[in-house]
Image 1 (cartoon, one colour):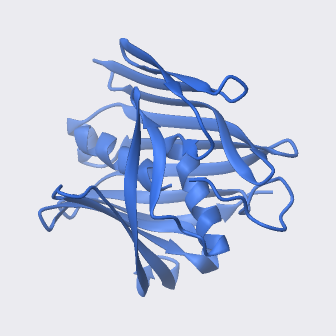
Image 2 (cartoon, rainbow, N blue to C red):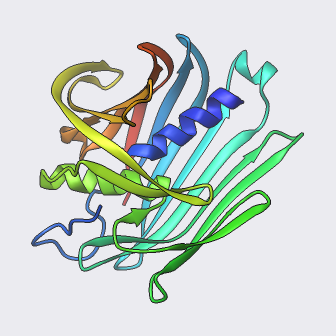
Length: 242
């Protein structure tokens, strides 16, 4: 279950503020439901379903559901669920609420962040801890960050860092664009933009491959430490929602 929690977390880490020009308020990419296979040490250990939906004229909702499958389900029960909701105002993604739940049947962990934009602050809770944090444009939650990355790449304006709330702190992650490559996927060969997330001085790095022809959907995520891959998540299918 620890591996599933890690891949769920890194999925959020990639996904700064720059409004997209000449676009009406609304989703920057079409709504979708994407299914991913989760791997650890080369073996399939679970699956993830990520959805994006519109909520009214300027709102959005995102959900992620990760759970073990096959033999992994014999050793790790439970699931990880994330959900985020927010609005897009003047082209800027502004989350309203984020929740993450880990339920194994034996233990239950929960993180929640409530964004109060008029007051310029957020309330973050993680299990028994809580903190009131300063809030400014560009700070998002892990799920809303995915939407922000897709929007930034669509505009060709990927920043050098992102800021998001994680547990009860606001963290900054450095971003590096590694160019494009062709990936072999269940959907066929796809041209993908390769992006690294890293912290200077650390040995852990996360890499995302994002496909422009799929409206900048994430098609692969990999986490490595000291040059050795630990976790990977790969797209199996995607359905566009109406």
